Length: 238
Image (cartoon, rainbow, N blue to C red; front, side, top):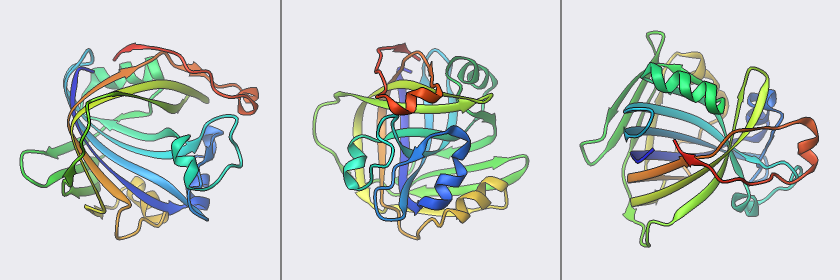
């Protein structure tokens, strides 16, 4: 993906509920505070890439990579991977490609992005029902060159959990503590988010004016992988 605008917000949530939500993946939640995990909500305007232009919303959790099960504390933020739990999009081509190539849990939804004002807003509806209405207030500019940052994403589809190497080069980054206002609807995903115990105040929020993303080849995780460190691999552009 050659150019995208990204808005994201992090919330601390109940670790026991988050653990139950993603139990199907076989991965372990990263417990960064006692009894608390981190849930990330993000909305993206993909403007230029091999999968065409489209809008996307994501619900993800910070997880422990294989080989670090049982570790807790703020230090886990430096090691945590990102498990993508729900990933609605508004175009069919990216839905099919994302499912087939990386195992992303993509679904079609109505995603209304409003990025042209000082406040960034995303309204997601699925099956005619409101999932959420999320409003972000951009923070202060984050200094520094747009370095390529490597991450580990995890997906699950058709009974298989996969590791997806992922790298991002970001320009025009702003961040702040808090900075988000969320209204949940009556869709089952909204109920799930409510049960996580989202606090009124977000941990932090960020916006990126221009992001370049590179996704590597997905690797299936087998039961034995939980006892061994994950092997990183390079990939090509999405």
